[in-house]
Length: 135
Image (tube, rainbow, N blue to C red; front, side, top):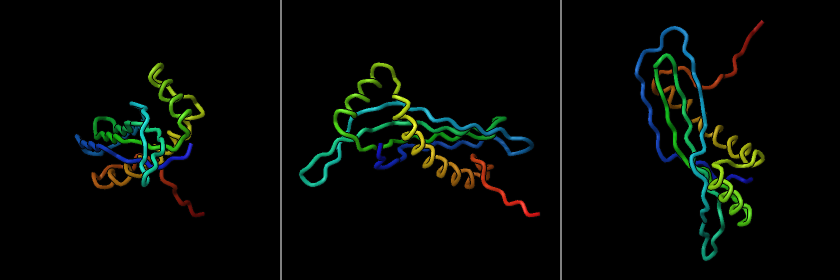
């Protein structure tokens, strides 16, 4: 499923406490809607799959919370888009084969944004960063 882009539509960041002691950081992605869209290039219109999502990062005990809402646009053929939208409307689920690629794209972009925002709020990074160990 080729991804055309991942865009954020809303960012909420709240720091409610100081970072002291052990902090537990939990990330989650939730697909909130799936719909058909289109991209106009000149006179031609190309079908797109629009997947709306909510990416959350929670710092416990009650230190901070990030909510990143956005949309992923994916290029598909019209039959595949119609099938995915119909399945979403019926079950609020997508096939595992489709979800893997969609979630990977969302998580990649959202983790980068969450990393930048955590730095701005003086919070630990929400993803494990590589460490260099010299012997």
